[in-house]
Length: 109
Length: 114
Image (cartoon, rainbow over all chains, first blue to last red):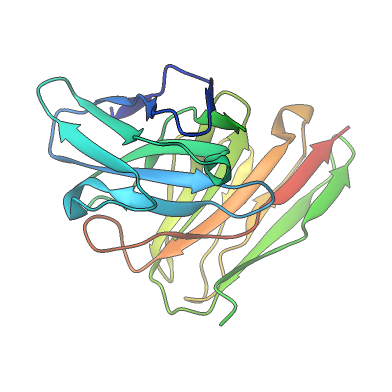
């Protein structure tokens, strides 16, 4: 069974400091990994996916198959980054998206 | 373009009552799903559908029924509400899962069972 773990429920950082959200997964096949973000009073939206290897809003995430991790990083956090972040996994061409428990990020001025 | 629309946004039910959460999408997406969001547990898949007439169970299907008679609509039914079903429910749709497919979420439905 696929499983996603986000060990930190809350991350509190100061504006301009680096932020890293941890995500570990367990899956025996070829997974596809995503990060979703939910800003206050907004719907959940896709932030980035590993297959695109892109940087969105200054965030990057690298899939490490050896460590089964997909940590999300941003070198300089901004106040508007305060939100709930979810790591998610699906098997390639699969039908089920499995979410981690979520990490709330609070960026203090 | 409305995207994914959920109704109602808020609902209070008494234990044992039944109700239906509505979900509609106007993007002609084949894949639709329902999740519940609980603190510390993230989003858990209840049921999903890969097309009209096809539904399947997710991680936490007990106490919920779904049907998919049209591509646009994917209602979630609670047959006999229980306090454990107090949660925020999200409907989502996409062309599919996997590379290149973006999942679009509704705004959520806050359900309280007393």
